[in-house]
Image (cartoon, rainbow, N blue to C red; front, side):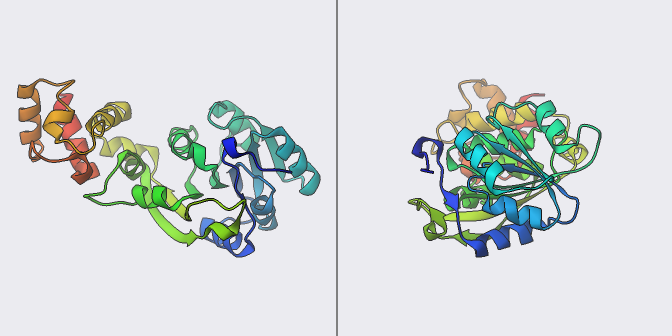
Length: 267
């Protein structure tokens, strides 16, 4: 079995790291787990050893066949396909949550899909109660960042939950070795109603549309990055109402500041 570079395949082979991931996730008897990109199955086996029920989503048909051969359990379901395009109904049916119940996500994410996978996970219905993910260290640090290092993922993840870095992971824990360090990222997700309440009447896409526009030229001041959509007068009034200086830069705004600004701009 040879890893495929264009799919970002770096298989986790370090038993200590696998143990830390499972421990951090809090997986226990009977828990329903969604695993994205099970690879060679080391994490899958560790999750099953805790008595959980695992839905493994694998894009690579050769790896999927290997997983079936190597990991024999009636608590493992395998779904061959692209996680980014699978429907909520497909995933819920595989997890058994179409008739109710909670689930967690535990995965060594292919690094090439990290941003897309996070966005997809946060929009799922039903949504997971928590995420424990292996990602690039740089991405994990960006998600957990505070001003003046905020990014789009910082705002998106902060809206939905509370992220923390469990531990960093060296390239030597993988085969083949990636060129960057990795990190185990855990995100406790808030109930959907809490997210809606925090949005103060905004639709999430309204907020994130303004955030993406604000970061379209990261080093520019907000009065310039938002000018392509809003008039100078509208911007000046909204920034003043939000208590934000027109010369402020997007990476210096907290989540609450972004929400205040988006509410003022869409009023």
